[in-house]
Every structure is written in C-alpha cells, then in structure tokens.
Image 1 (cartoon, one colour):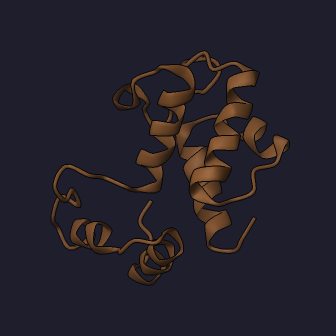
Image 2 (image 1 turned 90 degrees about the vertical axis):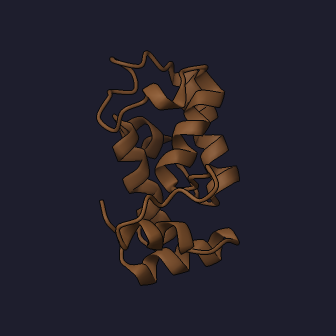
Amino acid sequence: MEISREAQEKLAAALGGTATAAGDKAAGGTGDTAGTDDTVRTRIARIIEGSTGIDADEITDDADLSDDLHISSVSLIEIAIHIEDELHVRVEEEDIYSAHSLADLVSFVEKAQSGGK
C-alpha cells in the first residue's frame, strides 16, 4: 500500500523522524538508509518477532497470525501493547483479534495514525 508524501511526512513528524527513507523509496530508491528500515510494516514485524521469537524476515504480509504463524491470544495481547507503546495508537482487544495478518495490522495502524479508526 502506497501512502502519499504528505501522509508520510505527517507520520514521520508524529513519530519524531523524517519521511526521507519513504520518500526515497517512492522516488525509485531502495528506501533503505544505512541499513535501517523504519516503516510501519517493519516496526510491526519486529514487534511480532520480539513477542513470539518468529524471525521478522519470515513474517509475510498475508501469513495468518494464528493459523500460519501460530501466535497465541496471549502473544496477540502482548503485540497490541507493544504496538500501543511504540507506534502510539490505541489498540482495543477487538482490533487485535480481528487482525488476521501483518497486512491487517499495518492497515489498522496506518489508519489509526491518520486519525481514522
């Protein structure tokens, strides 16, 4: 999912960074500055990795959180808490349980960060 340059800048400002890496990627670059990739997707994958031990590089966008990755309900709650802490969005229990994949979580966070729910 592509987000506009304006949305990238707002998100970067909210997270205390810059939209340079995302902008470079949109402009045809790799988006990877000095080995860091701080996209919402990458941050959530790292949160899942930290909560479950599943390597972030092995978590695909469409892998089912419970069926494919075998993430327990307790781990989902831990993931929700870390998303709240690190990405500064409110995650209700129903939100985390309705997400079936990494792509669902990314979509939820991006929508919440842009003021939607």
